[in-house]
Image (cartoon, rainbow, N blue to C red):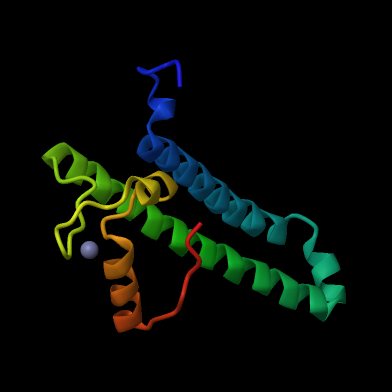
Length: 131
Ligand SMILES: [Zn+2]
């Protein structure tokens, strides 16, 4: 905790960098996957249908990963805006302060634990793991 001016010590900025980095990786993987299809490995895939299934599965995984990361990136962007407005760390639903431990673990959080849980229960959509 020595370098106070270092943005690397800002959990929100650090997470933002991390998410953007992963997002780049996933997008690059998708591109290199497309190139691979026209540049040789396609013959291997032709021989084994299981491999095709595997490739499709990996792409689906990448797509899911990309969606989760894009959602994270959007939440981080939101948290940044809220910080600029001075409302960062305040639950958007109940208006109470979000516990520091939660913000440390999840700097992009815009809701306290109870409100987040209520929201997720209400939505009851596909559950994505939060990193
Ligand atoms: Zn709340």
